[in-house]
Image 1 (cartoon, rainbow, N blue to C red):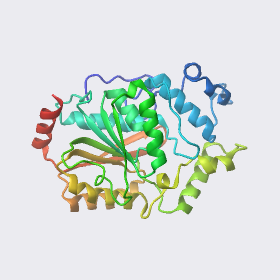
Image 2: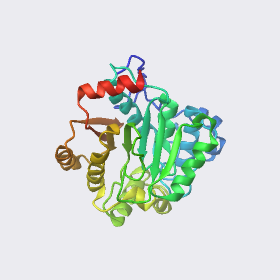
Image 3: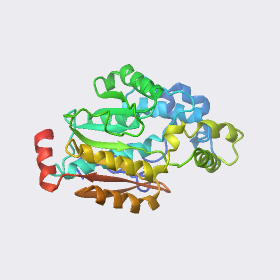
Length: 323
């Protein structure tokens, strides 16, 4: 870990020490940054400011406020019904990914536009490129199979001076491909990241959304309505084979781009999927595989990382591109 890490006394269990989203949200500061959040702010039984996290409009307003207050954005909006991810958890992935790159760079996190990352399935929200660029100055290629997602993410990138020239949005025309059809033959990428579809069917996705809303707010009067909008679009929530099948196909496609990318990574939400993923990685000839555990409060997650370069070659990559 680089020497610029700082630890907050209010850090939540498992939060990365560089994650600025530590402790409780400062709703006074967030409402100042984004006044449209104000109508959604309520007080919980302990007298603390909060919002109804089962209300998709409240969550979108919170995300907009966080992006303005913490990452310097002037504009951020997504269409109704599209995935609105929790920013602290997404930031954790970025910071752990920075540590992964630092390990090949004598412990120093590579910063600035010398680093080029690829967000596979960026969605309409474009959260990973925003956090990655504003935290470390990285450039991003960001792809999605949904044209409306690409359109809205591109609008976010073009509407914010803080993101100028940092995010290249590309649409994937073939849903069976991941890197093929997006990356150019001679293009070099330092790392990829992905939040794959979690479920194996539309029915499983709907049931998962219902459980999520119920857990967030069992007494919410709007729980039924929130179920329709909270979880995201079909391509964001489910695919044939579920998460394990999605990552397996991603690994197979990565074999064709093994000289173009230093580290491939993907979130793995379901721990029981790891054995099958690891078997596929060994079959594909990955030279180094890492599982990076993450946690936000009671939630546990992880991402899997693999590379086709040995230790010496990764050090050489860092020397040529980042120093």
